[in-house]
Each structure stands twice: as C-alpha cells, then as structure tokens.
Image (cartoon, rainbow, N blue to C red; front, side, top):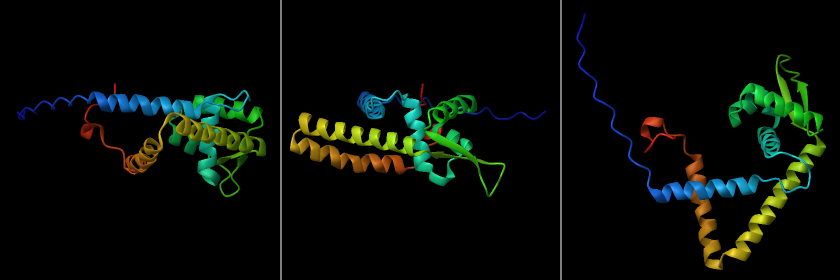
Length: 167
C-alpha cells in the first residue's frame, strides 16, 4: 500500500461582507416585488415565472428546457404546466421535427396576461423611481443597471471560487 501525502485542509471561506449581504437582500426584495402579480387575475407568481420563461425561450420551450432554465423538479414543473394549460395560458404540442419532444407555447390569453403583468410592473417601477428618488438618484440607479447586467452576463463562479458557499 502506498502512503499518500496528506492533502492540506481547504482554506476557510472568507466571510461575506455585510454590505454585500444587504445588497443581496435588497435585490431579492425588489425582484419579489417586480414578480408579484398585479393583474387582478388569479395567477400565482410561479405561473407568471413559467409564462415568462416560455416567452423568453420561444420555439425552444420544452419541459426539459424550462426545467433547466428555472431549476424546477419535473414533478413541480408538470403540475405548473398542467395548471397553466387548464387555465388556457399555454398549449403543449408534439414537435413536428422530433415527435419525441413536446413544445410549449403561450396562448393568446397567456401572452396577453404576461404582457399586462410586465407593463404593470414597469409602471410600478417608473412610479416608484419618480416618487421616491431624486433626479440624481434615479440617474445613479439607472447607471447601476448596466453594472448589474455585467454581473448577470458573467458565467457562474465555481463554488470553490466564491467568497463563501451559499447556506
């Protein structure tokens, strides 16, 4: 038997600075508010998220693509798809190019509901910016949007490169 040299213990993760934690919480709260249905219709946030994902994926929308994009388990996704289909928001069909595949499309009703929710969400944000921030603060925040877009465009960091593993 060969004696292998002991591996050094991994370095402890650096603590995440409090201001980064606070920024994360603020962004999450804003994202939740932006996703909150404001349509008067009885549509759950998860259903609106699914409609949005179908819209963004376009012709490539399939159950497997949706599960991968949004991190759904297949049983949860199947239930969401069933609910949306029963509500007349989506239509499932066999892919004519590959009959083993199912494609998911928004119905006119689903598209209208999604567009209405996006419009209401954008109006809420525009109103909140106008009412709660000065012109200088609005300009700062809008410039910060470009920085957020850069963060989102980056490939995810491996867990070992992150300052701390998520809890």
